[in-house]
Image 1 (cartoon, rainbow, N blue to C red):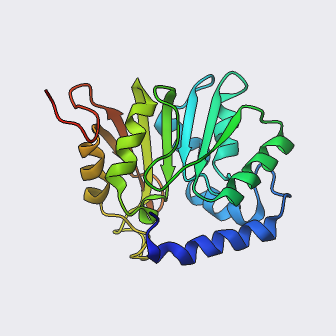
Image 2: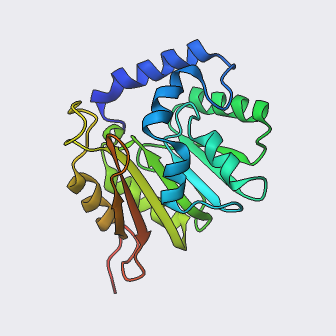
Length: 215
């Protein structure tokens, strides 16, 4: 379930979708400011995303990062773009067709399930998705099996010390604790973005899958 407090931001994104129509290319006008504060290349570098990889994006929205992920992995790679709003995914498909990105697959999921296939992802990425989640541990738990054994996850969220909007800023423990419960291990926290932290997780080989117990 999506947190009911976030219906306002969702309505704002739908309004942007209507304003953009099908005209958004690599960078839509309303995305320029966010790309400045969250440079796609720097985020992808922190995640270690390379050409030929398969990456899953959770909460792809209107495809702001999706197109950059597709450009980075190239035709030899694959991008799974997930969202819970069908209209957003329709926008992404149109946008990627126009840009010639035939290696982007959209996935309609739930707030607690990205809907990716098991064992296919080299990397996964979530940007400013956490405040929308009512049960983060469930999402992390269903995401973990989708990553390959050496797969990594990057979670990009606003730091309360650097971002005044209390509804959108996320304390570190709110991310790290449910990720750990789901079998992720924190590798690093990058703080080079103006207002966001990038949490890099890897899968733990010693933890049983989420929702199960060790024998």
